[in-house]
Length: 170
Image (cartoon, rainbow, N blue to C red; front, side, top):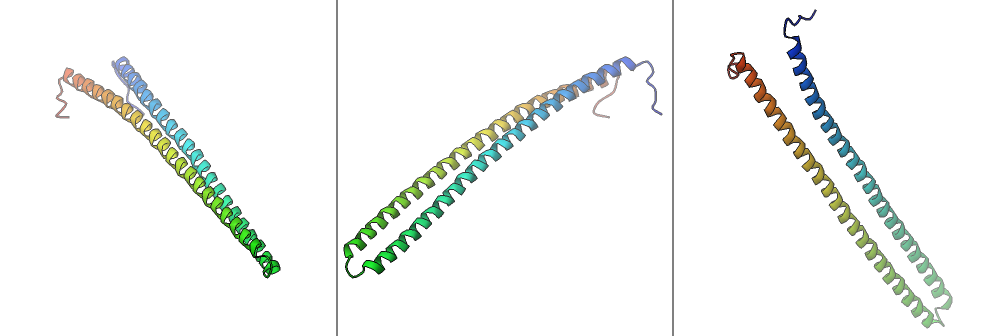
């Protein structure tokens, strides 16, 4: 059974209400910060998924280029078998086409790699910016919490002194 408050019920209730309101306000700020962090994490996960998709598309294009190169190689072998004796000019043309395809492939790979690098850089900037904003918001919230805690601590010291108690001895 809990002890009864005798004659001091009103003051204790007001203090508890103020304390509960302050705690609720701090908890609300904390929940908002946690929610923001979760949202940013989800946003980052979506950005990562996009980057992975781009990399997967790049791999698909590389596979396609390999298939084209294999097809070109097969075509060149067929032509060589059929026209070896009489069509040296056709063979040279096939080599020129191959060089062109390889050049296009190299340009495509370089272009895709450039896009991937640019996207990685942009996502990194976004991530750092988002994290910096979260950290600054948390730092601002921490400052408010520290001010409130200091004010409450000072107020409690004053109350102890009002009752003739030294806070350092307790």
